Length: 193
Image 1: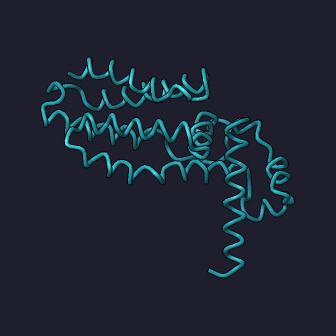
Image 2: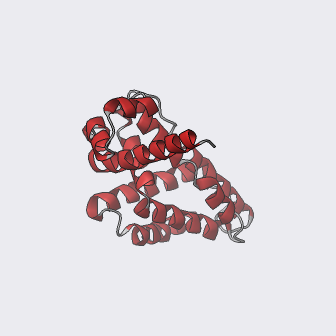
């Protein structure tokens, strides 16, 4: 990569970092391109050179949300127990939701999607599919009752988990998310076995 390309990449990364902080703190509507540019000591014109709109910055952050998960899912698939793998996976996701500003910003942006003027990737679909896959393996291994409506259970597990993470965010900025995650699994396992 040339020096100019390196500089552009570094500037784009810095824009995404500051924008993630702004979106997470203020939501899409409350985040200001002027504030992002000012924090980076850029002109708005320089900001627009890299991203033509606030919506495009938001879209990029949401798209990046999906990048870290495939290797985490692959690691989960190495567990012998599909249910324990799914529980482990949810713990890894909870840790990322608690600790990673980019993940938190993407989650906030998904909640704000009605206010965003660009199309964002569909939320939850991949998580529902992944959860269903683990449930199918768990059923085949005899870890859960046979004959459960796995698609519906996968959707309910994902919906419950995302609800728990949102309540944890609203109560204590996700400090209790790992504890809430464990409690959720205690309840879910009763329904699955």
